[in-house]
Length: 123
Picture 1 (cartoon, helix red, strand yellow):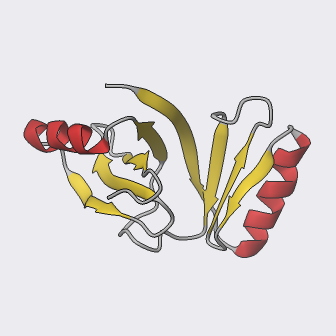
Picture 2: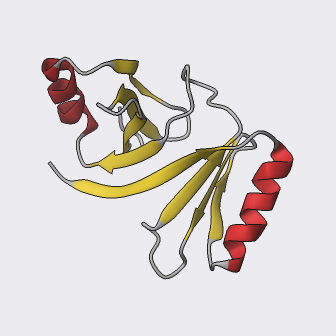
C-alpha cells in the first residue's frame, strides 16, 4: 500500500475564517490550490504534497474529517478497513471533483478521509 500524502483538515466556522486562514498561512508560504467555497486547500509551492485544508462544512458526508490520507488504491484500503471491523463513517464513493473516498474513525475517535484521485475518464 502506498501513501501519497497526508494533510490536516481544519473545521472553521465561517467564510470569514476561511479568508483569515488563507491570509495567515500565506504568510508561511502556502498558496491556494483549491477553493470550492466551503473548502479551501493551501499547498507549498516548493512541495505540493505539503498541504492543509480548511472546511466550513462537509457537503457530501455527515462530519468534517480531521485528517485526509491520499493512497494509491482506495478500494484496497477500504476492503482492509471493512475487514478489520473499524467504523466506516461514510461509505466509499466517487465525488464530482475527481476523488474516490471514504471516511473511517480511528481508535482515538478522529475521522480520517481516505482518498484516491481518479484518472481522467476513470471510474
